[in-house]
Image (cartoon, rainbow, N blue to C red; front, top):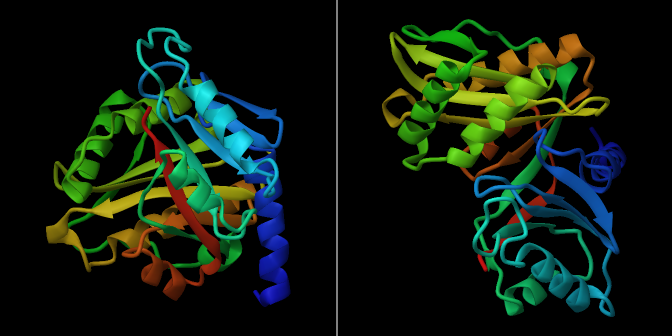
Length: 271
């Protein structure tokens, strides 16, 4: 893609995946309130976030305060007894230019930046999908498979992710046609896991996960999981794949043909 294509795709991404975003689980709700679009999720494990904003120097601080008031209201969600933390997903081209500094001043803490990458599905669907020696692919359809995914994530990242588990289970239960979850297995041991979310009617399929246990890195497993999901997306007629890439995965994805649309920083407010 040349620069004009990149800017066109970025505008399409902002429109479909941010401004007109769909809930990421059956229990969540997405609403536009004032100059922001936010997702609110009941319960302690849901992802609460500001997904998009249209702010300027005059209204930014008031909108930040309004979202803190919304998510910070104690007991707002069923079963909640304390303020709900939430994430403000800031992109480097969002306005005003000092929005990150304003979020910090309001008590938000920035997490490591991620690079928003996009590729044409058709370009990746032709990648070879032969597993490395000792690895088999397993598509996840049930709770037992999701538990193996969480085991793989723990091996790869060293952390537990209960909210991801609940999100995947919810999609498999309520919207199974919008998710493709897959494991890389070394015998009976899950060594990598990834998923693809395909919101109905969207031009973008989001690739998530893909972390691999340290002893299995460098053998092409990450590439294999990307190729598998690209083929599924191509069969569904979805034109673009999207990734919020870490510093580790960005070089791999760029070698596969992904291009940079921007950089996003999750600003987190914990209450």
